[in-house]
Image (cartoon, rainbow, N blue to C red):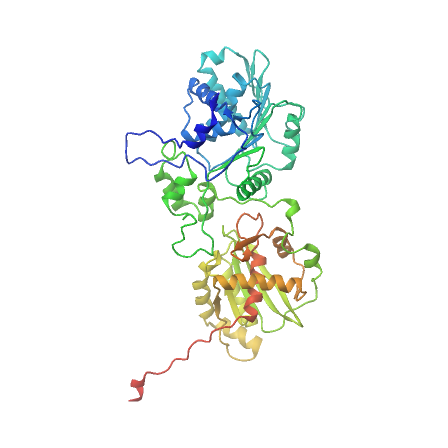
Length: 530
């Protein structure tokens, strides 16, 4: 065993004779571990892996020292270990080092290695088999490598076993595991956890490892729980008593960031790639991440290479901002907006969905409605043009700092077009020639904050009426606050649902009352009058 203190205080630098070589950050951006550790078995795992020909990077060694830390009684300091980092950084080698230790040194009777897909578990089995076969000292302790499909395992002469399974509702039931390795943990829900976790109940000193990349929304149930626990521990400054959480990721800019913001990371920078990928300089290169940046969508690159994930909210946290009963009490299926109306557009950060919403007076209240909520965003401008011709709204509202901001120039150009179809539609709707087009109002940050507060106040004072539409209800159920100093706005990231319907009605209601600057009338130069 080695002292844990030195491992926490010393940042290992990769040795290289090439001064221009670039390496990823060897320490995670988010790190919380129990404070009860006095020693670690990590070095034993590192040394054993080296005997099997597995040379670990500094970051992998760091994780093993932290995750395999022990308290004064020699028990694991952390029951749960969660490693969250982008793909192709070397999680597999980390798993192999931990499994070799548990099988040949740690005395763990059964280690269960599970993955979301069978092919992933099968590949992991073949890798550990190759490592053991090229180390005679380890190979002679192996009784058999079970090759039967679905029952792949490494069994020692003394009965210890490392078994590989694909996760399902029933997989893992009936086994008493000393250590559970859950690969691909970004796809891990309640059913799999219900099958696997109880296997450890009768074990004296168990440990469970979750290893995966950034959350992908609804499937990332367990990963989202672990991350929330870690963030809560970091926020209060008190470690979680049983969780070691390590995440390599960036903190991306938000729409409220001012130019030159230094508190968040620029996704387009090399520094962001280095911060999220500790394997750069070892098995990844900065040049390859640049190629990915140019080829992938911004959302895909942020998720797959920069660790910017989407995590579902805890079920008990639903309707945490506006209560369900309060919202449903304001529903009126016969409500209709009065003229004039205001429209608003919003787009998800990954541009997977967009919404067009409307607001108009309805007696003493304001009617809000989702006009369209569809995948993608390429349909928005044409639809907006159609709605403008039909309804002649007082304005269109867009937050220029949001993903919808990219639509502003195309929207303004489309609304400025005057073709025969527009003219005919206008004459049919209004009995006159084409009316002046609605202006596109671009919100400022203070407007976004005011709009959110105004909608919230209108709901709590029963001055909102709606049609109880499913997209809007779903958005409200998963909505979260994003603190902005003493105020707040709707959180766009890490909420696990499409909140564009909610943001859209918030902005549309604001646009119904916003002051709209009239364009200045062109005046002929004095020179024209002699």
